[in-house]
Amino acid sequence: MKGGIILLNALAIFILQLIYVPLLTLRTTFVVKGQNLQASMFAFLEAIIYIISLGIVFSDLRNLLNIGAYILGYGLGIYLGGKIEEKLAIGYRSTHVNLTKYNEELVNKLRDLRFGITVYEGEGINKEKRYKLEIVSHRSRENEVIALIQSLEKTAFIVSYEPTKFKGGYITKQLKKI
Image 1 (cartoon, helix red, strand yellow):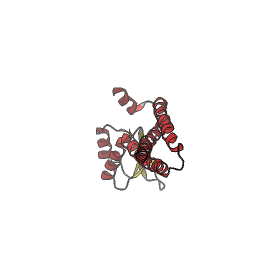
Image 2 (cartoon, helix red, strand yellow):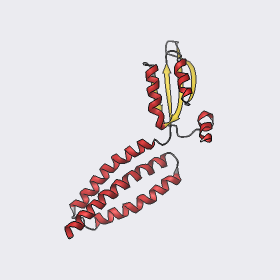
Image 3 (cartoon, one colour):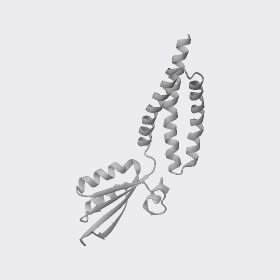
Image 4 (cartoon, helix red, strand yellow):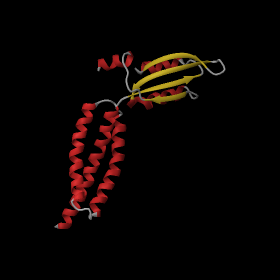
């Protein structure tokens, strides 16, 4: 009977960590993105799970099975949390593309696919013309944007980053429609 309880405790700790750590990952993501209400809801659940699982571990610090379950669950929880966050793809991406020639086909395809895009003309190091595309998309569509660019512009220089705040423009108009 006692062996069954020991295994049940270890299993409970492991499962709690598989829930706790992804919640921690999502809470952190929401804090970074300024979505404090969602972050606080995740923090509430996180705290409950944290207290329960650590309570079981601390009740017998000589029980290596519980400690191992905590460590293994935490490690796998990090992986799981990263995968969940990746699938949710919360937020937006700004992708900057530098081209040596204007590519009307690329610009039109991006606009047809409803990406926010602005085209700038500039000058390279040797005074040659360069074109910069500034594309804003939902993070879940970042790979789509990059794949399209690479299929039509093999030599494009692409930089992608996450804007922290934006106001006005095409994207905010699209958000209002949703």
